[in-house]
Length: 177
Image (cartoon, rainbow, N blue to C red; front, top):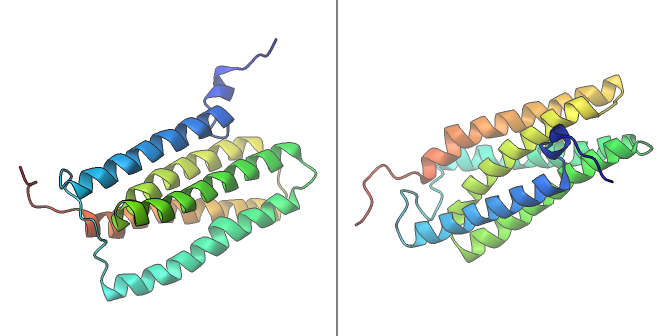
């Protein structure tokens, strides 16, 4: 008989939790896209970044590639003989891949600004994954430094989304009735 504790079910890196998260966040993205298209939500279809913000975001996306994807791949390779670490980093990278695919598909199919709520949801979930991994992983001292860098980057990304991205899509005027 399979036993699972409540702690194991609520773990962010549990397959069921990841699947449910992907389904819920996909539903939110679709609802957002249709809501914005129908002008039922106080958000714009386009992202109104200034030239300065675009310049910053070009740099930020490169940093995300290095710290959010390449460094975790390196940490995964470094922990090759540890099944728990491989499962953790595999789950992390799966969620990153689904986020990138969702942003690409939904920004083309629905509205470009859908990348902001997708990014927000996935960044928050990723931080939960990382905090969950903090208690699961056995890493070398250097790997812990890399892990900490990943956590700090995604924390900063969440702040960036709230401070820069969300204000550029939120319309303060009242909705059309």
